[in-house]
Image (cartoon, rainbow, N blue to C red; front, side, top):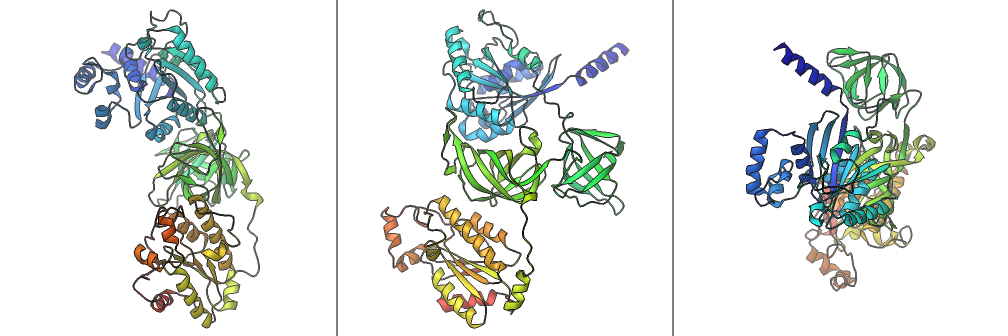
Length: 626
């Protein structure tokens, strides 16, 4: 019994000392990714007898190998995957050999699931990129390769699979390898190791195949056991984003988070970003234990020797080697949503622990994943990969993604659906926040409001063309002017004769049109005016962006609600008729959508009520303090 215990303890100790490799399998659909992982586990004797029995039964019901064992079913866990014979979700599996421990992410090959593939690649140290020997490298193979490169994977095994279907022909293999290496020249891979194999038959997966005597390189498992792909984060500079301020009572204030790089010890000096305040580490706490130091990947609570302004989203960094802080960046983006990403549109930007407002201020270009050519990018469609400029509404601490994945990565989130629309990697800052400051003026908004004897507000009219926005806004301004309230109307038609004369009516131009108007309205609010804006403003995201620019209670959304039929009947310009004939493309309500407000401050039914009734409804709602 003692010998058994000793052997178990020895085995556990050996396993605890093995390093861990995270790798991803990717490539085009039906290239054999799931089959490869299943075969790898099976050949390495890493699945139990009852699992083999269950796999045999499942293969008869759901398999694609005519009753033989279908190794793909080991990792295709969803019912939909087994029925369709494809991978949809990312399947993670842990296994170990005598030389190394592994976590493998089996990712889907279908184009519509590219976002899932990017998720798996974001934490991987190496990639196994499969190519079907009967088809060669396809567009999705190239897209996955490019995403791996963008996400910092530097070591690749090029698994030329299904060699049994081409009779293990060396010429076919050499051609595929040559074509791929030519394609991959611009990518940021340190090394690419081609391996001919048959995942279905087991050739060159664990054991060397007698059918490829011309191949002298490693088997796949040998490659994975020896590739030097681990990036040691302990040797990097200390960084810890704050996830939670721990205040169980008034005597304790700790800052909880995960150390994403470097290490820290009691007494070390740290800096809080973005504020820049400096303090020293008083204690490092892990549950009930007090630690001398914390290293990367440890989740701990840190207390400081003095009170500092630090909250969720801030970052603790080494005092003498801090991160950068900025509010504008050049970024690489993988677009993941059916709704395109537009220049000027506002999103939530989410990093490890903070969320800020972000705007795509410029779409520089997107890539042709087959040729690496830079293409003009009026917008980013599903699965596009591009380079953009991003602005956030307050400075954040960051590092380039190439230097620190955790500090240089982010996702963009749609404000209304909460869907993740894009994954991004920061390349560099375009402007350091400390170099650009808001100029403080003695005569400010409050002083102007006192002089005007009323509050400043933006009354944002939105609705279909012909709904009556301009007529109601004009009548309202007359009423307010008669009460001594200083006003100004920004009307859609008038603005397009000057400020926005360079813009058309595409979605991108509509977004930029509203962005400019919102910025002008913000200045007029600061001037102490009540500004009335009369624009279709069809998209909720842009109206929400305009609201975010001004203070609490300063934005009044007025929905001028008129049925489309009534708006067309009132149309003296004949715009709807032209739109229905196809003479006016991108016309709101006909071939371009209008997103009605969900919770407007004022909801007018201008198809039923007179202008005077609508104006009085607005006046009854306003609080101008005069």
